[in-house]
Length: 97
Image (cartoon, rainbow, N blue to C red):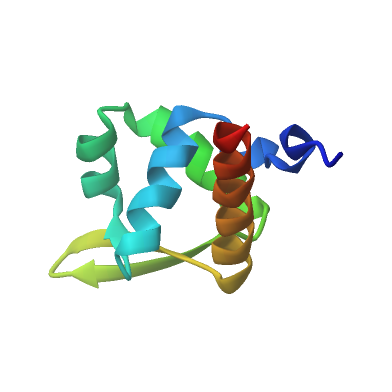
């Protein structure tokens, strides 16, 4: 019997990371402020989770200027999309048991 619990990805265990990835799976890009507001988290909290997901290769980061202000936006990478879908599939299998 296959243990689906071992297929859960530790990178997505945090509710913040789960929220970030969920938002990015349904949107092409999401900016930092939107993530912060939608997930009701502090700048530092969002930044640390984004950094971990970026380090894992699951997020791409784009920084640009809008007027004189910087705007940082994020998108999910193909590797991130694959890993998150596998994580969701493992969760589904656990729920079906």
